[in-house]
Length: 140
Image (cartoon, rainbow, N blue to C red; front, top):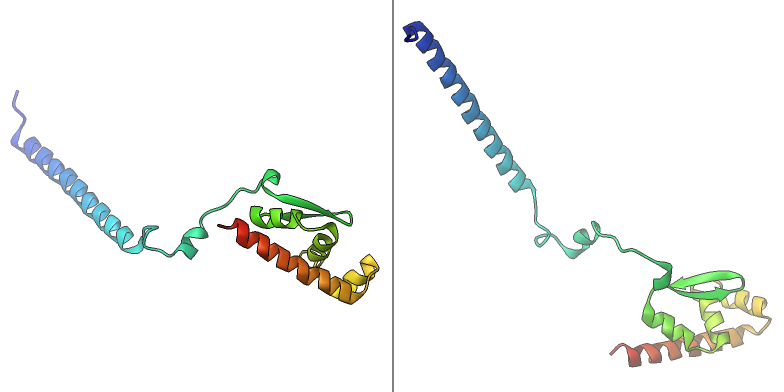
């Protein structure tokens, strides 16, 4: 049995409308992709500062150098600095840690350690010189 001309016309119209809707969807999707491409930037195009904001570094206690200081723990991330601090005499290390990590002044350190302020200053500056020398030798 042959479909009637009216039914064939209706099927052809429906077929056309479906194809037209799919073509319009395809065009809309391509426009959407074009807008995305215009707004997006690849990581190679952006600066290192912006790219680093999207990254993270895991920190594990095993990666840190821990120094005990008057009942407090001071953690140092840098391996080179940690080794340089370990090679210092105890007094110089303590003074440097108190000054730079605990943000104490020479006078406060002198009161805590019961020594002269000038002694604290000498130990701190000579300790920094030793750290600088150690780091220059081992950084290469």
